[in-house]
Length: 489
Image 1 (cartoon, rainbow, N blue to C red):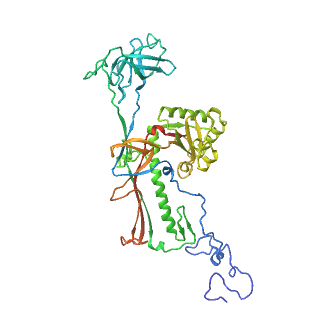
Image 2: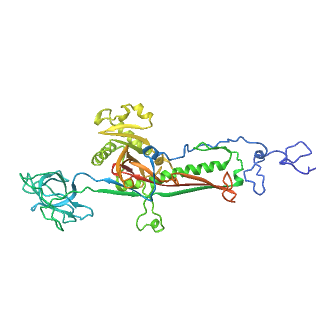
Image 3: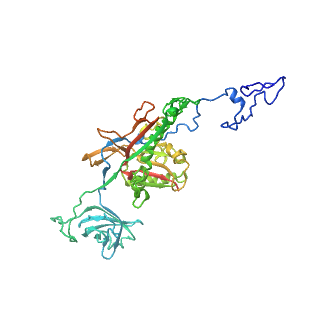
C-alpha cells in the first residue's frame, strides 16, 4: 500500500527490497519547474562539502598605485590647468638650405610657423651637414623675421665658400659667439618691415605653454532592500578587506575598487577630443593622459628587444643627453620588456662598457632588490626597473602585441621647476602629478555618498541603497621631452 502523504523522496515498500522509489539516487534529476537538470536527491538530503571562501584565482586584481609611486595629487579651483615650460637657451636651426656662391643660408625654407631668425650680424656660427662636414663662419648680414625670407649671409673662416668646406644637402646652424672690430658699436635695430641687413636682433625669451582640463568620472552601485538582508553561503573576501556572507558587500566593494582604478587609468589613457571627431561633436572634450602626452611631446622607442637591447638603449641615452639629461629615471615595464632588460644587463659583464651598477643603492644588488626595483647605471644615468601590472593584466593592456602595444615607459624621477599661471610664480612639481577640483565648499578628489532608504541613508522612498562615486581630475605631464614610451612593432 502507498503511504499518504509521501515525505521527501522516499516511497515505502511492504517488503525489504531495493526499488527505484525507496533509495536516494545521486543521478535523480528531480524534475519539476525551477529544478535544475543536475539536481540530485543526495544533494537535497545531505549537506555536501562546501568551500565557503572564493578562490582568488587572479590574485590582487587592483591596478592603481602607479601614480602614487611617481607623482602627487594637488588641488585646483579652475576648469583648466595651465603651465609653462622653458625653451632652449641657445640659438640653433635644423634643416636649413644654402647657396654656396653667395653664402646665403635660408634658416626656415619650409616657412614653418613660429620659426624666427634671431641671428645678428657679426655672430659666429657653426654650419654642419649630416655627412660629417662642417664650417665655422662669420655672419656678415642677417634678415630677421619669419618665413622663407629669414636668411643669413656667412663667410667661412677656413674655406672659400660652403661647398669648398664640403657641405652638402640640408644643414644645421647654431651660434657659438660673435666677432667685432676694435672700437666698434653693436648695430642697432631698424624699425619696420624688412629690417636692414645690419640690424642687431635682441633675443626676447619665450616659453611654451601647455594646458589640460579635468574630467568628471562617476560610478554607482545599487542594491534593493531585500537583498541587503539575504545571507549567502559563500564568504565574501575582497582586496580592501571587506568580509562576511552578505553578497552585496562584495559587489559594493568591487565597484569602489574598480572606480579607484579608473581614476588612475583615465590619467594614463586619456585622450583629447580632436577637431572633427565624433566625441567632440557630441560635446566630449577629453583629457590628455600620460601615453598621449609622451606620444605628442616626448620620445617613442619602437621595438626594444634583447637582441639589440644595449644599442637601442644607448640610443635612448644619447637622446636624453639632447634633452633635460635627468640623472635618475624609473622604468615601468611589461613582462617581456623587463626580461629583455635583464638579458641586456646579463650580457654586460660587471665593470665592462661602463658596467652595471646599482646607483644610489650603494652599488648593492641586495639593497636594490629589497626595495622592489632592479637598479643599474649606464653612462651618467641611474635607472630603477620594476614591473607595471597595468601592462601585464589581461583585462587591460596585457597580451597586446603589434604597433598599438605599450611595452613600458621611462619616467624621470624628482621634480621640475615651472611657472604656475594661477600662483604667478615659479614652483617645483613632480614631472607627473594629478590635479583635482577642490575648494572650501567641495572637495572632489574622491567623493562617495549613499542615497535611498537602505543601509543608513534616508534620502528618498526608494527601497534600495545607492552608493555613488565621483571625482574630477586630470594629469599634468611636465617636461614630456624627458619621457620615453616603449612601443611594439
